[in-house]
Length: 141
Image (cartoon, rainbow, N blue to C red):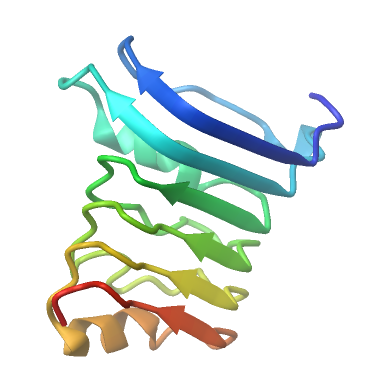
């Protein structure tokens, strides 16, 4: 537990196996996390373990951009996320489908991903009642 409220990580290279970790976010003061420019040198790992760490964060703002991430899990319980930025990843239309826990989300940025179906994007956002800003530019919609 540290008093850090805003953490930015740039040019991260993953070189070791990614394992599931138990982490209590309630013991931190973290409000926002920004991770940009990730390179992954480990190709066999539990994607569920990795995506669960981020989807279950108890923070307001999360940015993960310019990474090889192909998906993001829907939080299991109502989330505190108000701002999500997943610019320049490899997300497809299946991201956040049937997700009803992003009820406080106000801004969702999915620029430069692999979105192709506008109907699926609209279904993704139908359970986000607080959503005010959606950016899906630079996709193949």
